[in-house]
Image (cartoon, rainbow, N blue to C red; front, side, top):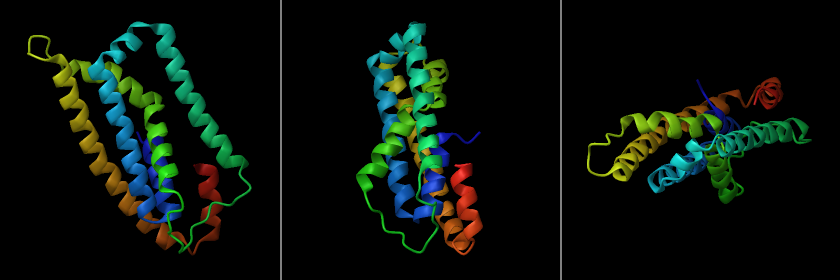
Length: 173
């Protein structure tokens, strides 16, 4: 199912054109690289072994996503779909994408529970196997999310003439 990463990228594409969601996609993928490096360093094994620590990270991720939603709903600014597709702060888009990815509970579970199933203990290097699986996943997500970025910006251009949609999009997001 689409998670926070896809919703974040799609929302940026609909509201801000093509460049914003591509920068956001780069941030999300950087978050996946961070998850990969934690797995390679063995930090995910420590997190996975400690139920308290794992739950703390999981709830922090859920709290961050809740914070983003409440911030959007309480915003006095309206969600706009306009012809102005200038990216105002690329660093903010990148860092928000990365934070969304790193704090995404679904992503955390994916790296902790699913990826280790593809590691063969009999093979030479477990860290290298985790690195390859993580980077392949990041590459695939970059391609898929880039496609979302491309098409969501095209949808945003077509919907820019529907003001009721802009308000509905703010609440939906």
